[in-house]
Amino acid sequence: MPLIGWFIGSQVKNYMLAFDHWIAFGLLFLLGIKMIYESIKAWKNGKEKKFNPLNFYVLIGMSLATSIDALAVGLSFALLGVHIIIALFIIGAVTFIISMTGILVGKKTGGRFGKQMEIIGGLILMGIGLKILIQHLYF
Image: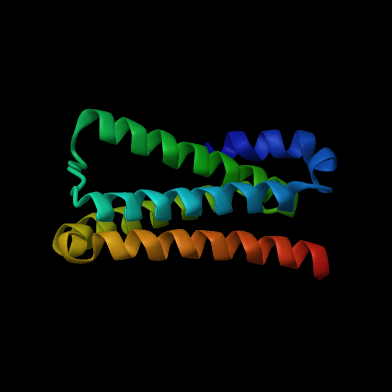
């Protein structure tokens, strides 16, 4: 998916440079708001989310979400002029290591800190989007 994104990005690079930062800001900010909203809603309702990471539908959904994200990363690599082959190997290795670590840590701490971490994750996404926007507008 990063390779496909890189290819698409190389084709539309000149058209996107004027507003790519607005797209990144909007997507990250909206995703952050959604994460915070879902966490607060579950907290107020007192409902725990049942989450089984080995459920077939959960696996398909997570793999699609990761693939779309990887597509966006490939697209941004084309805009930045990154050498894609080296990046592909690094992305694959890091994704595997972090995913396995996240699953292990999440199993142990998810019950205690899940809701708070979802809010913090949403705030971090919103902050990253704001940082991208400010960097492109003022620097």
